[in-house]
Image (cartoon, rainbow, N blue to C red; front, top):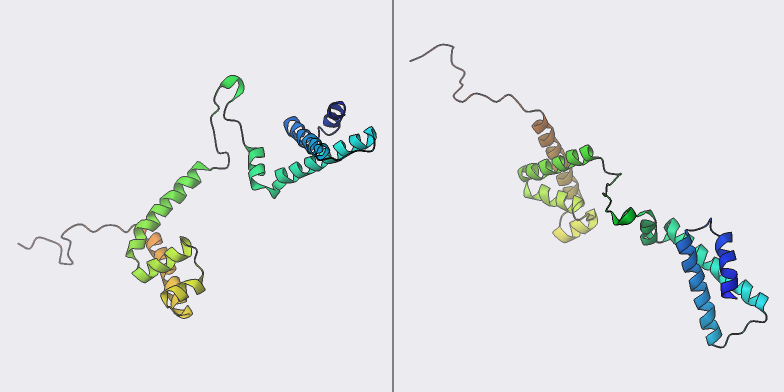
Amino acid sequence: MAQARRDLLLRVHRYQLRMEDLEDCYSQATLELISYARRGGVFSSRLHLGNTIEQRFLSRVRDRRRAVQGRSPMQAALETAMSLGGVDGEEIEIVDVRAELEKLVVLREDLRRVDGLSRELTSDQRLVLACQVGLQMSRDEFCRRYGWSQEKYRKVAQRARARLMRLMTSEEQPSVPLAAGVSEKEIGTHL
């Protein structure tokens, strides 16, 4: 009965999933019914068996569709993944279409600058920013752990962000360097 209904059910429901997934769902449904029969389960007629196969198959199809549509992050990722072995075994080049190279380069450069400029902050300011950005620690947890008041935390964090911003903007707009040995004396040679 499972073999007789297979082609019909796969054709009728081909719009719901890829053929490989439909075959997998049908195999699962068939195995469930075989194990049911081995445990002593009986069907009243061939029609009953056919309807049961279809019901189990559709249940597996619905489960797979839910997994593909996002209930299972792994299944959703696998659905959008590309094969690494192209046609005829040729390798394909992997390109992240979401990546904007220029934007990534600018962000990485900004991150390097922040790392360098953060050394000019006080140790308390660095600690607060590290816990906010790196550890993503809440204010309450930070204050409990380090024995700070909420107000001290707020002020140190605010000053740290402001100072880091000033350092970033002052570095972006470099001032004209003074020549060595320049003084405010009168013009001319005073030997």
